[in-house]
Amino acid sequence: MNRTGEITVLNPDAACSPLRWKIPALTAPVAWQALQATATHDGRAAVKVFLGGQPAPLSALLAHAAAEGPAPLDAERFMALPGPSFCYGRNVQAWHRPLFETVVEALTRHVVRTGLGSGPVEAEVFAGNYPRTPGGVHREACSNIHLVLAGTKIMHLWTGDGWMPAGTRRRRDVAAGTGTQEEYLPTLNPASVLTAGNSLTSTAGHGFAWTAGTWHIAETQGPAIALNVASYQSALHAEPSLPIWADRLDGAVPPAFLDRYRRHVGGESLPLAAVLGRLSALAMRPAAARRPERPARLVTPRLAAPVVWARTDNDDLLVAALGAVRRLPPTTPVDWLTGRWGAAEVAVPEASTGLARWLCQQGVLDALEEQ
Image 1 (cartoon, rainbow, N blue to C red):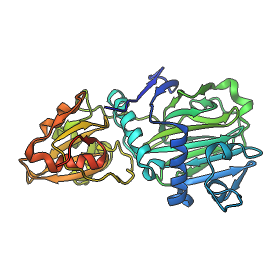
Image 2: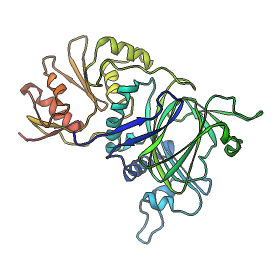
Image 3: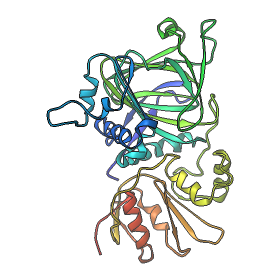
Image 4: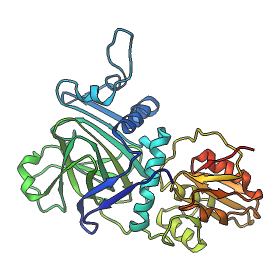
């Protein structure tokens, strides 16, 4: 593999915890590119911009006044704008293939330890220079892995409800896109309750993890940018995760696990292809693959991402990688794929060359020779 990633939650049994991470392919410029791609393709639904503490149009993110005409802002220019600045984008992995691949690869090792959640998973980008998150103290029906990419960020967190001052007003809402519950405390000054919670400070290479239903609000100390991975679920409380079937999220998926996974995600009627695709993308919406199919008999592993397969009732073979699914003849060899882990190169069986070409297109493999 030419890419690695590791996320280590320092207090994994706690409701909130500091973490450290090392993901070479995950950088502030990559996250900003994903944010701009999301603003371009899905801006009204997925991106919010605030300048000077007030909502601002997307044009404030996508362009700036210049003699040669509008041009994309880079992260540094956005965060250097006068006054507080804040930009948020959700589901950004769906519009930027490199970020999608990076997040899947990094999360794969994480979910092997923690298990799989029940709802959709989204990557979010937070960027700016702000004294507090717009909207105030809030909580959502998702667990979070929050990775600081640049700058310094403070996360204030509270568990339960007993810390709230009497008469605190709540505003209930529904999260855009996922339709899940969330709550806000719009009139509460977080400074008045800091001693009742837990305040964590992180810089690049560090971050925070917290469970669903944990109240929180962020602030930056100067410009900062972070990537958050939100794993949604049905309610505002932590729920049990589903352990995977082995020590590696890869290979033939046992039918008993597929049944448990269907029930876990509330998709008992989902077809097998949809279940496998969801599993291989770790419940994220994939960005489109743009690599060409390259004929190859010799390949090298490119991503440490899941490649999973199962057989239909008609004995057809379904193989899934990074959210995409391929239907193959039942005699197609696949066992060679389990040997790709840690291998410098892998010889492809004659009957699997079509599968290998497709996996190269998805980005899991790289071809070493063309036919």
